[in-house]
Image (cartoon, rainbow, N blue to C red):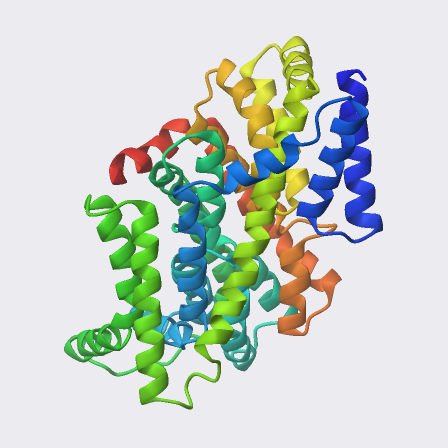
Length: 437
């Protein structure tokens, strides 16, 4: 079987199995890999071998630790603490509620690294507040969909870990590389929020608090939010202080999460209505999903290598695209399109082995390539026709899908600016990498 025929067989079988039979992406990858290997006359025992070896990784242990810590923080009332803390700093300005929503999603993303957890936890608290301030439902839905994925770009980030493992780069460097684009998103969203809502809001009445009283309020809320703020201090302080590795910092954050959860549950039983075992089950399901995805995506990568698909694609790209500029245009379009319907972790695991070697021939570093991929996938999360973020946020905000898409267009525009800066200015990305690593 030729490499082109093997590629077509893989893509068609994957799409049919995943969409027609509604099979999880990980199983669809495994099935397509098995089919391609069998039809190419290769030994299918490699599926079991590569699946097992892909999970035999110390660095991979970081994922269940951070997921578990994030689940504990999500269900222990941390989101309300963070919102109150941010309110103390934002104060009474036009569009303040929208700004608080943006900043809260960024802060909560630091704890969970999950878009779905962020949109659920922050949305339940901020939607009533936004409605109280007469924010349109469609705009509220678009704002949540646009901000929830910021947790993927601000470390700790599970997709960042996945990319680092596949590409062989340092996790800390991948994490820091996406901070710059995250700031572009945040600043752009705040500007849009002011122009769309804040500009037409009635100017808030002055609180009448003196400077000393405002300072005392900030200190009070900071002390109250200290249990939430201690989590990123543990993670970043241990990693960048040279105390421990990323995986060990994840273990410490999980231990801290357990202690905090148990103490709060014992002292305030009405505050936490979920058991520790239930949190373990939720984290276990998420970890198992990512583990299976990692195992079968490695198998898919090996199947593409053994059947010559990798070399075929590499030669096809380098033979038809002769400049770095057009290669960057191609991968941006590809990743943005895939982000509209494909799971971000699956895309990272499948496309990195195929395209990273080609990117490096054009002088694109692994960190820069990974940043381009992650930023595009995040924007795809907000981009129709599939737009997973919009589907979820519209339900939380009780808004129509069409209305949310219309309100989301300016936010998508900010995303395109972030993509442009990320792609055209590798020095901007390297600045944050060098600053924090």
